[in-house]
Image 1 (cartoon, rainbow, N blue to C red):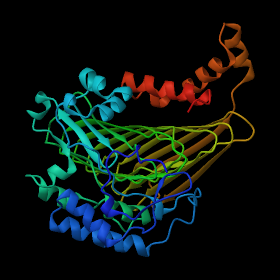
Image 2: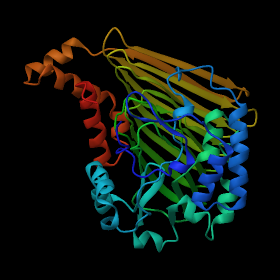
Image 3: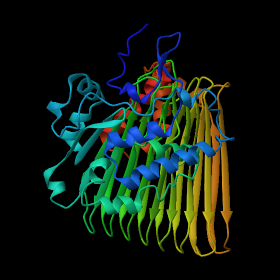
Amino acid sequence: MKEKTQVADIDTSMYDFRYDEKGYYKVDEGLTPEIVEQISKEKGDPEWMLDFRLKSLETYRNMPFPDWGPSIEGLNMDNIVTYVKPNTKMQADWKDVPEDIKDTFEKLGIPQAERDSLAGVGAQYDSELVYHSVKKEVAEQGVIYSDLESAMHGEYADMIKEHFMKLVPPTDHKFAALHGAVWSGGSFVYVPPGVKVEIPLQSYFRLNAPGAGQFEHTLIIVDEGADLHFIEGCSAPKYNIANLHAGCVELFVGKNAKLRYSTIENWSKNMYNLNTKRAIASEGAKVEWVSGSFGSHTSYLYPMTILNGEGASVDFTSVTFAGKGQDLDTGQKVVHNAPNTSSYVNTRSISKDGGISTFRSSVVINPQAKKSKSYVSCQSLMLDDISRSDTIPAIDIKTDDADVGHEAKIGRISDDVVFYLMSRGMSEADARALIVSGFADNVGKELPLEYAVEMNNLIRLEMKGSL
């Protein structure tokens, strides 16, 4: 039998480990209160968090799996390890991170990104943060950027208790309840009133263990008049057994504050990405989502914004690339709860080699949201005749004083354009990749340069079938 060399360091007392015919470990016992209690003990949770976890577990057990969207039949929850502990404590100096973990993140460019363009970096490996750092000048502004567990025991403990899983309650859906029971890692950010963080903060999540789940929780509070750009990156190596990502992001944006949340997700194609992201915007606040989804076997990903204050707004920009064997069901939700609110959604999806890309949008304009505006644009590009692209809009307008529009387009790459580029010396593959990169430029132009370059590299690799 194979050794468990792919796993950094697992507390095997928490699980009933077996091996299947391929030599990978299995967990036959499933998720129990004892496992949840052990995770809570490992994290040093306060008593209220342990109670929260156990109630979430009860909710998880009583809720059905989703009966719509892509199939998740290949995801056997009894075989998912819910906590994988790296062989290191969290470090504040990159040189102190163990070499095997450091090498993984070096290849992903995390240290270089920190040196060049970021105000702070958090790096999570499996279930724990292994590195966290924030620049002195940012900390001196009063900005708090730390791992969530540390913040939960410090002076911001009451703030976390007040906000934790209030936007995404465990009763929201089965995987939100699972997250509430076994969450581990993630980031806490608090930006004081009036503070503008000039350069981005970033968290990067790496799930390295086969057959494991990652359940990080990101909680960001941007106070009145403050401004922040937060970048999230995700990746995992490819294994021949299912992995699960069921993280949670909660964003609280205060009066006249602004938050941009950018994500580049490059999960491996054995990943079930069942992530939940939600923001609430106060009076005059602005939320911007920028999202690129390139990996995973199956995705359910629908960031939601609640426009709760007059004049609040949201911009949502995304690109999704579904290749062979991928079923990516993505989209966005907006709830207009106040007058003069606005939402603008601009999405692009690409499908290739039989990939399935589905875009779902939900716009709700409630009776009190008079004079609100919403516009949704979804453009799809299918690169062959075996792929699929669907658009499923839902619009619920409860006032006669609103301006709402929706459009959807599906197209293909023009042979004439490909021929023209080839006549200029490009190969057919490079010509098609260039066209697709241009199609996805709505996201690329919204990202910092190094992340736009990464996205274009991912597109080229997808076009060549290298991912």
